[in-house]
Length: 396
Image (cartoon, rainbow, N blue to C red; front, side, top):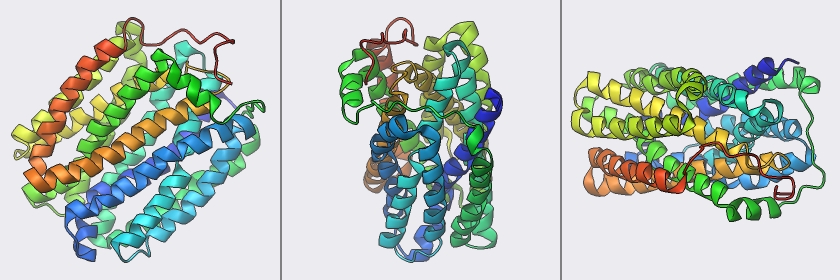
């Protein structure tokens, strides 16, 4: 199977996972209204997905290194499909949160292990382009989830969103089954469970990268999580219109994903990371100061999308070079920091919104992103992509 075709197949798996992952944000007002709770409390459903998603990276990464990446992805996508269907039958905040947590658990393997596979088959000079393509396809699912989720909630109801997404998940699952034998089968039977994480965290290059990924999740994803609620409260649009507006984020991740691989060869990854954090910061300021203007709101959402993909693809590419024999663990730790940070950022954002209002959340997170940008220059000096660790220093 050609390398580019593998990226497309993995991208389709990421497509459905990210579509399901991000669909709660635009339909959050619908869920909160239907089950009779404040939208700030309903934000728990986002955190309920993201936090288990992050935690279970720690489990799936070493399992993928030891028993095979494609085997772990196959197991996970089947159970992910079942868990997504369960979300359609939830009737209260507690059971919905449990079902979303289960979905997050089984989705945990798909993105990081796919990225680890890409790291296995692409040399470093081609890797950011491959990662950008993979992330672009994956976040196209997220982008389309805004409008499709909003449309389903508008014409049917929010339960129909999860039912239809469970059915759609069968498509990439079937593709994976059909092409299963054609995927590379990379295993390192001598890999350990804890040792790779300890070595990755002990090395300053990898530790500082994980800190930045955590902060990226906290403030970029924390901002994104409440955009749907902000649009509903500020502009009083229906769920379909909210989904259409938020599609700007997904579309710009696709554009940015395609651009990042080309731009990194021209201006370098260090500048791509800086541009990403600048765009994300400007996006939050734009929503806070000009969010009552629909045009500027769309601009802000689009800037957040391109800021995210520039930042995330650069940090992901850097992380793929930390260990070749424990790449599953290295990428799982990235996802743990990112999704765990996103969950915490969403939870903290709910508290900020309750105390100071939704718009204040974007101002506070914009300032936090300025601090993150400054930290990036302190934590990562010189080349953004490190030379590969020597065999003696690689995590086992």
